[in-house]
Image (cartoon, rainbow, N blue to C red; front, side):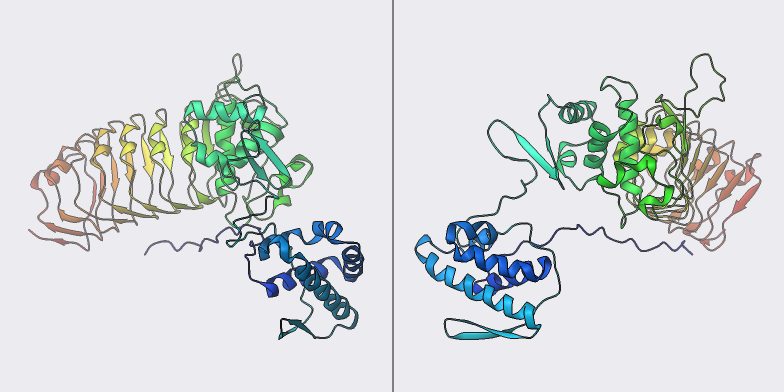
Length: 469
């Protein structure tokens, strides 16, 4: 049976919904909401401001006026409506009872609402106007500013004269991330860019050879910290002064991650040893090329980002026994130096990327206990150094491809899938094979005679198939 995975929890963006033009009831609801949120004193102050004239009161109720879309000639009627609504609020907040409000001969029952967040802005389909309290992603605020994006109280410009803009340009030129991701303020890529450009205490030079690897690691962090408890940038500002549990559940061990310490000292990270030091000196406060990333059983929850390709020196990638979901990025095949890949015991689905056939130095691939589907790509036959291929307990289908190019393969574990067809004769060309497990599939036909003649073969499991002869 497949390993059961924890249901993923969608990240809900903490944004109050925009309120459309719903007429006078929506307008009164807006007044009630602001009164409930601000307290009883707000109503009295509002009434005094409205008595001073329209111009003074407009900054309080300007959003509501946009939402109703009234023409300038009807301002007097709207002002009367506002005054009536404010009086209702005063009475309601004083006695805590239901009140009646009237508009053009119709009435509706209203009571004081529980406090709720005020809208971030309003829009009107009727008038074609929209609130502009927060600029939209990629929307120029002026001809001189160029595109600007907002994250909470932080507004960034993509002007290359700023460190943020220059770092963005460096990332784009490297091909690590797409510009659309860097402009999405909710994306892991934007969060990583913002952190490394403006918040990282290390403040590496943009020409530093380690800055892109540091960015790639930050994208991985924001992609997998926890889909329902993704930390905000504000919560990372004083991360170094907080305990490991400061950001909630998240990873089990995130020692030094996203601090000013060199990424070679971050939990699970090892780097090239420094010149003049021992070959085993791979963990230190520096920012050299990452050779090992071992975060096994560390409660990573999310997707594996394509920015993983930024770790071009990586030899060992071990993210096994976590909660990684989604499909594997094609960028995985860009890790040309990779030797060992462990992604077993996750919730990964989709097909195996054909680009994995470019991992010519890989010796071990463990991707068992996932939800992988589709046919095993024939490109895997290019991995002439592969020693172990473990894809058992997935949902792989189709026939077995010609894997005769795997001349160094000793262990082939494909049991507990839905592989169909006959066993190919090319299996007998795997002259180093010692352990072959194809049980619990849907194979048919006979066992190739040459396979039984392999001197190296010690273990063979073919149970629960439709093999005869």
